[in-house]
Each structure stands twice: as C-alpha cells, then as structure tokens.
Image (cartoon, rainbow, N blue to C red):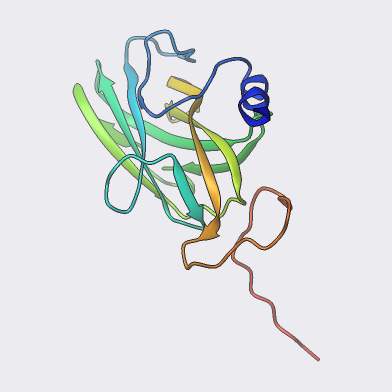
Length: 179
C-alpha cells in the first residue's frame, strides 16, 4: 500500500515513532550530560489515556517524565511539533515571556504536563522535547519522537472542508467588516 511506503521514506526509514518510553539508543543532544534525561513522552487525550490522533483544534496534553540526577533551578521546558521534512510548525515553552523563572527540580523522577492549544491543520506530525538551561543549552533534547496525527474532524465536530492541506497552522482569527 502506498501510505506505509511513503511514510517509511519520509520518516528516514525509522518506521513508526510511537510515544512512551524513550529508548536508550534514541539520538539526544546533551550539552550538560549527567544532569537529567527524558525518560518518556506521552500524548494524552481528555480522559488521560495515551493517544496518537487529535481532532482538528483539539487541546493537546503532553506528559514528559524526566529522570534528574543533579538538582537544577533554571529548567526551561520546550515542545516542538514538526512535519516529515523536519520543519518546526509549532513551538511551546515554559519561558514564553521575559522574566519567566526556570523550573526547579530536585533529584529523582519528575512528571511534567503541558497543555497546548494546538491549531494544526490535518496531517502527520512529530514531536521534539527540549530541556534547556537558562541560556538555551540542552540538559537533554530529543526530536522526531512520537508521531501523531490531526484528523479532519474538529473538537467542535466541524469538518476540515478543503480537499488538501492549505498550510500547517490554522490560528483563531477575528474578521471585522468595516464598510
């Protein structure tokens, strides 16, 4: 069937990337090795169960499990969502505003959950998780982990009407007739 062959090609031969435990051999970017490690990433539905498909404009919940070996007080957590061509389409961070303080973590396992008002167009996307220090250097970072889909039916049962995707992102927009 064409879809699995095309997906395999666009995914660089990696096969399907599923959420859950991050394998030890998963590529990582660590400027500060031995401080913390991303242990698991899950995309959750409204009921708290793991999902791989979101409805059009459905709120996204991402749960990240982190193993901390040394305490930190300046963690910046960032999430990206990108396409098969590795273009980042969506970016969300714990430090989106100036003056945001870093997250403090003690040693041990921690679970952090992000809620994101995603407004992606229907399609297939990958996630990236970055754990940065206050200067943007990674404690740990992974990309192209956890493939998810946004379907044509929306969170309010509206349907994505176009035959093909027009862009990747569909922000809430207000339009006013002035004359």
